[in-house]
Image (tube, rainbow, N blue to C red; front, side, top):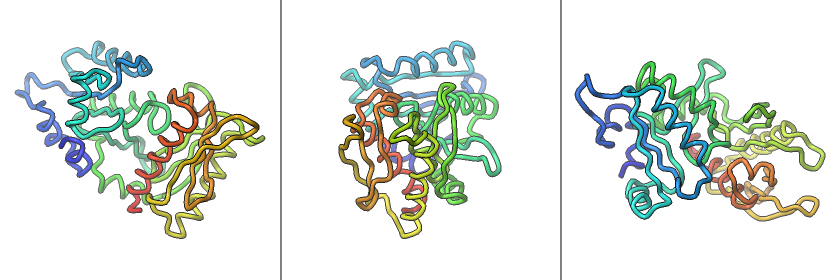
Length: 267
């Protein structure tokens, strides 16, 4: 199963073999992209267009295959390869290192753009892979080493030129706040989530202790993320709109992000 192979740390040449992508050296593209996207729904048009534009710009140096899991054939392929959400593989890997030194972080091209990764992340990885194929891919072991440097933090970031508050767990963004809520700025919300997570993490929090429930703030629906029954994040419509979901559904996505980040940390 392709997904299992990738998760066990065989990006690069072995990953390309699994994708059937090895060709003679003079014919092999530098970057091979296999993107599992629900094209039929139309909600990921920006991602599809960005990938196609990259391939068109770089011609024979880039091979692009898009599997539309909104179609019957694409769904069969998507499930057979072991995936359950949007996934972008670049040279056989879906997980990469961006930056260096204390600023280094993990980016995983899973789920729609807007939380775990941004178009800026995608552009950075594609540029690096075009320059030096396979150089930025991370195995689970390497990702864990990077993640454990600073297990949990918060920071101010940007998403499409908008200031956002980000919660970083295991060197990867798991929550991205873009609006004020209850009088708290996006950054303040991120800081409070990180403080709660740090306390719970120090007490042994595991990925199995993350839950989601519906809630409301000022009469507006929110998705609430719970850790050991304690509210650690609220997903408002503004955040949910990033990935084109209702707040409760977006909270499920955020919870999945958090669980996977905690697993990367060995929790």
